Length: 319
Length: 175
Image (cartoon, rainbow over the protein chains, first blue to last red):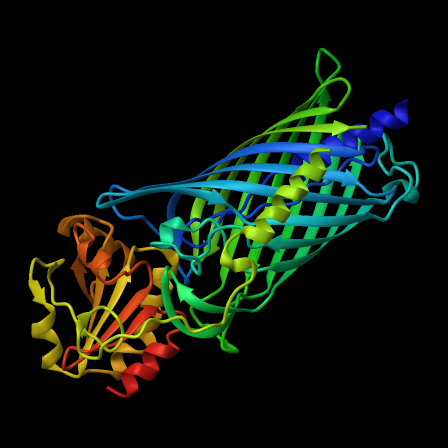
């Protein structure tokens, strides 16, 4: 019984971090989703989250913050629907599909558009059979973390600049397939938890024959390789009704290198973003319902909007 | 069951969704009558007059005969726009002194607001035209990052996204 509780608590901490979508940016092509991770003992999981993202200027290529034009209010809202499924004792798969609303209001221009974002399909391998979470560290072996290896494919199901769109405000996706390889380390020594994730993604080159609804001379384009580093620390406490409340602070660094057009480096491409996120997650006694509230703020960047994201989410695990 | 349904939904999107899932390299540009009035490459640019951020009216058909041509860049003061404009500043403009470069702001809605955005973004060394009701943006089917090159006779030589600037450079080199 104690083992099960250990595992469930650790899973909640993990779910707190890894079921929150944190990527967007409408003019830059947003609406991408992150992947889900199913608890070790879970057989299936569904996740629903609402992201409210607001923009407050941007960082230019020199990392200098620039204000948006006077009278502008730029927002993106996303609903992310996800499901995880256990394939075997160490393998699991998940799919996340976002739906995106872009609300862009300038003093002289206003648009409201919506559509599917880019979906993500993932498969994860859990490189551990026994739980690694402990109450007390008595030996070196107790420090062994849970290790996950993941592969994710971002599918360009969103509306991109290369679709039949009127202008850049219609975009809900980037228009490219991307394959990410991920390493995730997770360690819980109750009531504390720490996670480390590193992902490296490669876009697949594609032909382009249309830009924002206008047909152009066809050319080949690719976006730059993408890396994501994330660290998080969490603390859990028991509620009066024997539920669990978890507080998690996460730091992430995202970098996308310059892409290529016709095999030549695009000197105007590439981006960087650093962000901090704070999450409060509440789980019920059975640990099969998890409610999450996350505040994510971009703290620094290059070629990227300064964003704040408020996320509300609920996950249900079928054990 | 839920997982299966979501997988089916994604599969349907894959099969019936947008063009990104199976992108085409086919050249689908429409044929145009050279020299006819329009906004496509090869057509005579439709004339317009816009005020710049210093309240000076700029008329397109008056500008292009004054040098080798005119470059119009549509900006909404965003990260991508800034990256393009910064590249033009450092790698293109100085090499083409007989070309007139204009940024067209189609989002701020007023000359005063456009001037503020121009100053905040650090482009007071450029001439910014203010498309207050985005009529010119609509007329030229332009959006963020669109660059239009018009030669000294008023013929459009380029009307597409800036991308990495190489197409703009190649077009300017033969004006």
